Length: 310
Ligand code: FAD
Image (cartoon, rainbow, N blue to C red; front, side, top):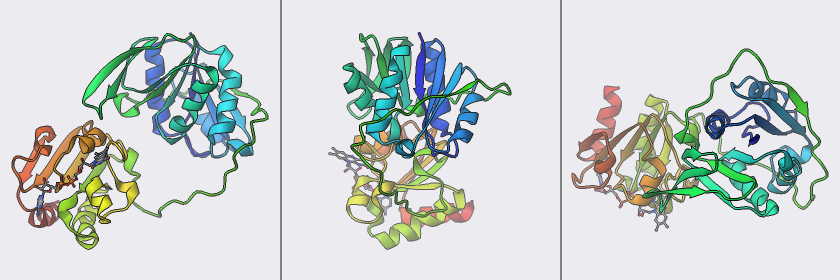
């Protein structure tokens, strides 16, 4: 049952999500090849080759693959798909954009955001914003699966490297062209993969208060900053800080929710955190139902006190 794992990376280093997806691939069972599609991505291929359990790494390099645009990358994967029973990828930005296209071109269904492997063709996945878990069996000859990486530990690296094989990027449909990436400059850890996240909600009341109250605590803890949708919609925090069903899904070691009520749509994005701390003045706020530690009181007093105590 050969498996093709589509790697997430930035052309310089392999994202941790790839090693986590490898653990899911190992649970499916079979020989696993990792596809590194990119440009000047030899270092990524070298890293992938040292992951335990990899048969070989396929390295496809082309300008069109540099940003892993959906059209050329999907065409590449489809050209390789005949050799594989399963095509798997982390449910990150590349996997979410490329794999649905692969599934459509192969005319098969996709299993999205798997959180457990029950059998080689059967997976568990969250539905209804994480409020229920569905078990699905993929009946197609080729299984196309994205993985919610927070649910899997990262595969380890070994000293022995698997062979790296160059594969042709192919022609590609040439329908899209990469123009530019714009990143918000920040020294803070990336929200989606941060070990600690400090988030603020509507209770902060203004952008100034949000920054004055939440950022010093986040900086002290070396944490990424998150926000509820209410805080983002009110303009207290930028869009890319939103955590939840329609924001980012995070699974840090520690999540500190300040003035966030704990609506199901917010919980969908953070309830897999290992330890949850909630600060809220309402002792009945639903966030306390998922919190490991709760502080009931005014966040404008408790957050600075918390920060000073660290
Ligand atoms: P509120 O619910 O207003 O809660 C504010 C909390 O702050 C209250 O619990 C209050 O007791 C507390 N508080 C007030 N003042 C203080 C103080 N001084 N000190 C301490 N505590 C205080 N939401 C998300 O977050 N992420 C999403 O991705 C998301 N997606 C959505 C998708 C859909 C389709 C829909 C319908 C909704 C979505 N929402 C999402 C919105 C969600 O339903 C909630 O409205 C939102 O999460 C509420 O944000 P909040 O907790 O900051 O605000």
